[in-house]
Amino acid sequence: MTSTRAYASQSATTPLGPHTIERREPGPHDVKIDILYCGVCHSDLHMARGEWHGAKFPCVPGHEIVGTVVAVGSHVREFQPGDRVGVGCMVDSCGECESCKAGNEQYCYAGNTGTYNSHDKHLGGHTFGGYSASITVDEGFVLNIPDNLPLDAAAPLLCAGITLYSPLKHWHAGPGKKVGIIGLGGLGHMGVKIARALGAHVVMLTTSPEKAADAQKLGAHEVILSTDAAQMKAAEKTFDLLMNTVSASHDLNAYTRLLNFDGAHVLLGIPPTPYPPLDVGRMIGNRLTVAASTIGGIRETQEMLDFCAAHHIVSDIETIRMDQVNDAYERMLKGDVKYRFVIDMATLKGA
Ligand SMILES: [Zn+2]
Ligand SMILES: [Zn+2]
Image (cartoon, rainbow, N blue to C red; front, side):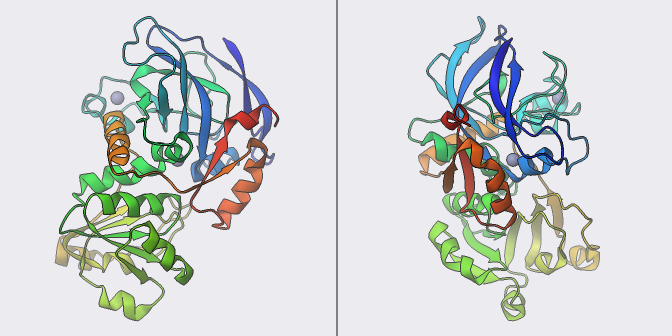
């Protein structure tokens, strides 16, 4: 085991601060990674503050990890020291169930092992995420970061990017399809970029008029102000697909009404309180789907990274120091970030 510098919250009510964790020595199939950058996801904030059921402390968040391989186990063939790699939301799964065999480790029947806050089968206790100097991960959960992607701005692809890419592919976003992205934040801005690159007609649906120009800069063909009843009425029955990135509870029917026959409205956030009831009559009458999705499998995550490299897609980021993360959480709650904070892990030393 190696004592490793990290940043953790010690309870639901304490801010994050310096902390030391243990990392395992690489086993035959492990890859040891020096972490260079780690994106800041809303999940980090919820878990660090004990807002989600089952939060364990100390909590070291972070599941948008990029860095450099420094050591590999004796059986590892795909990676070698010096490689630019990433780790997303999972570090393990059963490997044997139908989901795992199909490459959908995120839907493992036994539950995947989260990069943080899951049981650590190697060391006992729970897993610690990327707000740390290094991490040791099974090679099956390590991604290659293509050479032309800057590491810092690529970090958010590991959660925000794949969270949009997987459902956009699954529900066939592409040429001839009109795709709405609901909410312009960390997830939404990736949705606009990826849907555009897939060839779809992309519409940003936002409650904030001031976000219209930004959405167009990111690649949206159109912007609909969802608080404007006339604009929403005019858009009824025109969409093939909606990606809903809003994690607060709201009336889903207002958006489902925008779907044309056979359309799908995909929920990507988990609201802390239930949604109001669905208008099933409307859904039946148009064979509509209201669905939900989370991240993507490992194969698909690599496909997403390669797709982003080919289309020069990265996240729009603001780089912060490790000791700024508590302030960053407050700013995220106010929506004051364009569009993802990324921690420069070199600053962990002085933090
Ligand atoms: Zn995340
Ligand atoms: Zn499984």
